[in-house]
Image: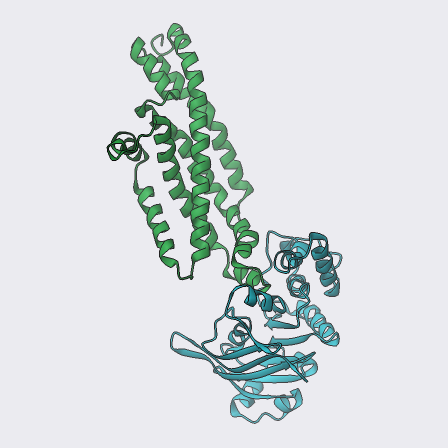
Length: 242
Length: 222
């Protein structure tokens, strides 16, 4: 299986404190890799280093065989094909659902207005919100907002989705709707790297799970191996506290 | 009462004040437009250069804003009109007032736009950049529209203040409302034209004050 995204020895230090240390991780085509670990273990930083929202200070991120460029139009082009979904949704509050999803196809990918809206509408239908295209973000529930945010990433037809704790800001009864969408994307073969606290979801949906602690990947493997036969003490105590 | 509302004097003052209204409005509109545009351009430059190697430019813009917010517009006006000619810069009274009011409003407007821009959540920038929008597009389509909503109430207040400050131009012989009234007052030794001028200013700016209040409720941020 060829890797869509590969991190090779990526490191990051914030004000002298190491946040990521020598991260090696690959996500293959159609693969779903879940990042688990305690808060502050570096899951968000790892995801943000992939599209350089956070600038890694060591190692290399390789996307579809080439290093992710440092900036400019080349980086923008990579970011278009690497969708990101944030914990806090970060929808544009002044634009409705359709406009949120159509903005980047129109202004970043350079599609015409009609094509951009078609792409946005298809993406919204895919997350089950085809009937809410004109709703403003503050008229939607948290779960619906996060699905619009997923649609905003999908409208660009990305090769991989980076999801940063997509359900952590949601009321418990809304988590299911978002996880259902992520599962259906997995069935469609969308590659995903997802930081999550939903261990049950990771067990059932992930191809592989990586356990992060203090900025290091301590264990990485199939869910059964990681969750049922944890080797390190850190992972054992992390799982026992859930 | 007769002294304050001398009908003959008022009749004599009226045509001048009417032509003064045109000058007052012309000066107010041009200097407000120039000041707001200047503030928007400077705040945009400052926002787009943030974190870039050209950071000192942002510092210069901030310094301009501080200096011209500390400068009384009347002082700037007399400097431009009476002192600048010694440096070879000859400005008409109208131009001197336009430049002074525009620069002072530009400084306030820059700070207001900048405050609006910086109060937009960082996540908005990140979401826009993560979809491959350029910094310029992210600013224009995502950040600025949200910032402008926050800036409209304070900006309206500064614009009204600028409009009222056009009366300062009377000291450099711009034939606006106050200047016209004062010259009739000087000829007739009657205070009536000044009261008429005061009434005209209220009539001109009261609607703006009301619109400003309406905008404040309209754009109240939830």
